[in-house]
Image 1 (spheres, rainbow, N blue to C red):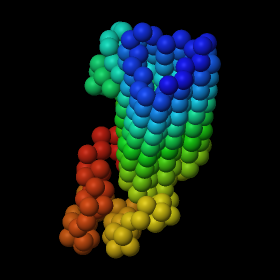
Image 2: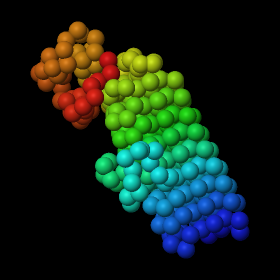
Image 3: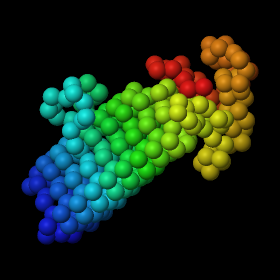
Image 4: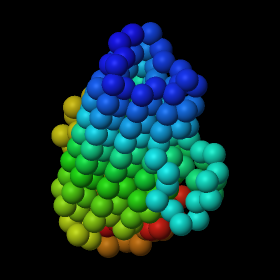
Length: 257
């Protein structure tokens, strides 16, 4: 363990083996840092934060600050960061509110680039990437391995599906389905994220089925209900199709098209 003499570490903080804390960083009450995690200079980690193993937190990042929510009344809440996540300079990750379940969660192996913001009650799956200055409103859900481009704003309560990719400078006001590409203010869909699916080693037959479902949902002129009925009878069942259909059926805000 290596703690710079100018760092301030609360007595109740729990530090794993091999933790490094750089100059002028502040580690508050009830903070847990997992084994091998590195905290650079001038980082602030406030109370109620659990950071996993082998994470890297760069200078001037702020973790666990109070929610930017006028309904917040000082209730206890948490921010949980999974193993192997990288958080770059000046990123801000807020704790949750009781109305959102009390936990803001960032999954394992995520990459939160400089100036990105993760608001209260957000839930990010494993392998999510937020590029520079991507900004999430409260209660946003981003499923595993989705990518959000730089300078993109995501409206509160929106969902972004697994393996989707969103181009930079976009405005997201409706749910983004899994496996697709989206871009624009306001965002529109631009086909499947075929490059991302190939990189993640999706089976070719699954990609073919997703292309068929995409055409029915977004290119056929059918209503969503009609397209889902056609998918149920015409597209071979696989885990990816089941996830896509479930995501669309459970959308509260509506689906980006």
